Length: 305
Image 1 (cartoon, helix red, strand yellow):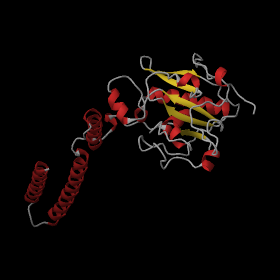
Image 2 (image 1 turned 120 degrees about the vertical axis):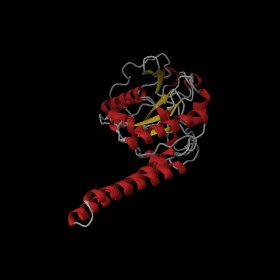
Image 3 (image 1 turned 135 degrees about the vertical axis):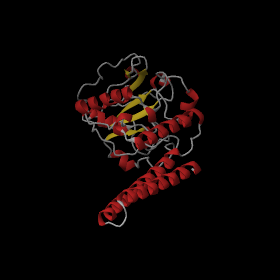
Image 4 (image 1 turned 90 degrees about the vertical axis):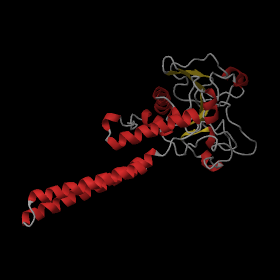
């Protein structure tokens, strides 16, 4: 099968070129399979025996990905298992990309402060550069900017998980997927890769960044800060902080209810004042006393909470 379009990704190094040794089959790639190396440097890939088409190495100092190319874009690489008697994997119109980093939360914790990429928490610059590659693959080779599969978190993505494609589904697939989706394979990488964000960036669509605190109301700020503190606690200690979020939401609802009740009471008192009977000042004082009592009751509830 003839290869069409540019075969070298612009700027990619060929310092670790393996096609000269392993050749590969020519094809027209319309699927990108994403992997993680589970390391922090470009692997040797057994001298190329298990190499992908591309490796993306993070440069943390300059906040960018450094690309290495091992095979032409439209030449089969070797990072997938291909069992006898089943379907083709490496040679079924797929281009393969290894991201230097980990999808394993245990490895992520073990590496700690050591600079590394963890696929569920990729920095924006890594998403940007992965998206740039996806856009180029789409524009130059027609790889759809779509992903009809679910990226599952590791380690539940390992083995014969629910996201693994059938032979028929794999044979008809187009777009982006992960090692965890390929039949005849048991690997779970790249885990919870933010594929939707990568493809949205590649397509030039907004990726809905989280709101900044100055755009939030008081409840949003409290729950956002609690969520952030909770995630930090889990990452650093493995333990969650108390469920302050649920407590805040419950309290916020109670405050809204009391506010509505006080407003209704005030309106009723106003109507009574218009109809005569009690002195308007006396009615107003009674309403304010009722409101203060309600707020005092709320304060006691908060202390008990």
